[in-house]
Amino acid sequence: MRKHRIMSIAAIGAAGALALSGCASDGAGGTIELGGGGSTGGGGDKGTITLGFLPSWTDGLSTAYLLQDQLEKIGYDVELKTLTEAGPLYTGLAQGDVDLFPSAWPEVTHAEYMKTYGDSIDDLGTYYDNARLTIAVPEYSDLETIDDLAGADLDGKIYGIEPGAGLTAQTQKMLPTYGLDGEYELVTSSTAAMLTELKSATEKKEDIAVTLWRPFWANDAFPVKDLEDPKGAMGEPEGLHFLGTKGFADEFPEAADLIEQIVLDDEQYGSLEDLVVNEYGEGREAEAVDAWLEENGDQFDWVVSS
Image (cartoon, rainbow, N blue to C red):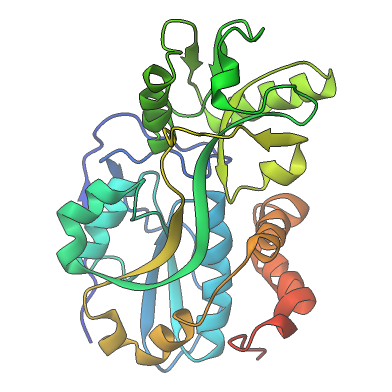
């Protein structure tokens, strides 16, 4: 069995480490944290799978614990390794320090990483096929398309997330495409700060525009709608993928077979993320997965119950 190496990479740029940042920072720096996560199982006789994920990306946080639950039930030990940015995670996959990434955006948002590391990474399957970056407004807003932002009474601000996020870069490209770069400032700080602004505005029934993405629990938690993007400036919808280090299926064949069967729709994914992030929260992720499987497990052929 291939030996795992411990790799530390010097940070390049700021790390987006706040806990609510979905598809947030995708800078090139960060460190693989060997103390984060861990294994809830024990005694797996089929080998140890190192699963790397970013806790601040709640889509990946949810699928990380789902995979840990399922893979340990079929006899693997799963070590969870937490990181703060995508760059070192892709590097870790390419170099074999990480075996599995449970929520990658390789088609558009992380295409540059795949250009760099793709020859050393195996695509294990697409489990969600409608991931997209959006500009959102409250449901009660009269705005329907990004074109409608021109001249709208929004104080010239669109509230965004982390400065280094792929979503931030795409929004900055969108503004001149629609002629909005002279009218709007993209206010960047953190996902948590953006959600605070969104919560405050919707509670007061005020107008606001924010950067969001799907899948993300906030789309269900707040009364929001996506603005139509007739010019496609926010990018095309993409799939969320499970990625493995090169040769993953050869080393962990039963794991690869299970992983490639997993497909989730909007409702299934949304309920998983909501349970893990909101209803149960930090430290109770395994309980959240158990509850989700209890409620949804009979919908899938791939679920391992024990």
